[in-house]
Structures are given as structure tokens and as C-alpha cells.
Length: 236
Image 1 (cartoon, rainbow, N blue to C red):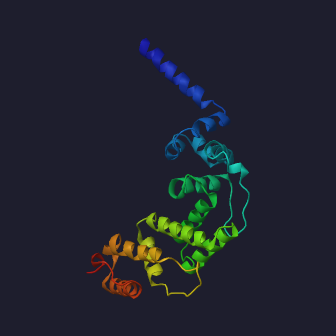
Image 2 (spheres, one colour):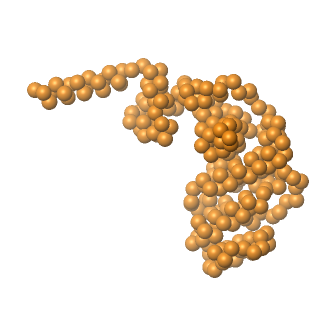
Image 3 (cartoon, rainbow, N blue to C red):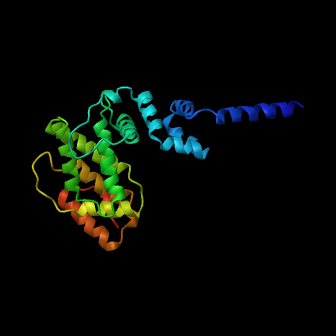
């Protein structure tokens, strides 16, 4: 008898939770850690639909970034997007790029722009075009040339470190390594740190993916840009 009563109470609690209106479910979900949201969305189809609606992301913005509504739209080639996009940009900016506790939304948007261009495009634009777009965006937002160059370098490094290890990324890194040097004025040239990271990932994370010809072609490109090169890059 006791077991039946306990089961009934449990079932009743589940039914009550299932009958909560959407705005209350959203208020509950946005208080859970962001890393748990994908798991929560898998519990029920209706919950998954809530995570896709703009009302959820608007509430999440207000809860996690209360000053977001005060931000003005910025000029430049990289748009701000809807609430979900804005939340992703602010979250990335806070987790990866927060400097002195300051969260800059445009930095997160620029990270998303570059990562999507490199990962989702079958033939991404030349890296010089992507880098120039990022520099133009920061300058349009009032940042100095030096700061624009520094932020662009940080974003390139972060994106390169977070690319998935697959055939597409291997082909992408080879293309970035072999792109001809384009002589552009500062700050439109990529930093040496970014170029170094491309070769470093190729010769460490993707070393076993090379064939004989690709390896020596890429090594020649590395030697033409950097001297000396690490001994760990040598040897096929």
C-alpha cells in the first residue's frame, strides 16, 4: 500500500511539472547551468521546442546578461543577429575572451563568424579576406588599430584551437599554411602567432594524416616563414 501511494505521489508530481505553462518552464530552465541545457532539451520534445524559441533566449539574455538590452547596434559587416545568436556571442566572449572582467559582445560575434566561415564553408574565403573583415568590424566599432589587431589574433588562435579534428579541418589547415603571402598594411596582416599555430597543429595534431608529398610541401612552407623550426616538426 505504501509503495502504491509513493508511486502515485511521484506520478502526480510529474504530471504537475508537465502541466506548467511555458513561461514557468523557461524560468526554471534558464536557472540551470548552461552546460546542462543540451541534456535538458533531450528529455521531452516539448522542452526541446522551448530551447528553440526566441522567448527562451530572450529570458536567458536578461537572466545571464542583464545589460545586453542596453547595447546599441553596431555598424560593420558582422550582424548582431537574434537573441539566441546574441546569447551565444556573449557566453563565448565571457568564457574565452573576458578581459579584466569586461564582456564585449562583438568579440563573441566575430568568433562565431570566423568559426562558421572555416567550418561550414566548403571553400572558405582567403584568410586575408576573413582577417580583413574582422579588422574592419573592430575599427567600425571604434577600436584602435592596435586593439583590433590584437583581438583578431586572439580570435584566430581560439578558433584554430577549437576546430574539430577531422578531414575537413586537415584540408583547411593545409590550405591556410600554403596560402601565398599577401602584402597588406598593418593591421590587415595576420600575426606570426596565428601562422605558427596553423603549422603547429598540422605537425602535431594531424601529423599522421600526411602523405609523403604533402608533408614535405607543408614543411617547405613552414621553413620559408620561420627559422628555426622546432625539431618536433621534422621527420615523416
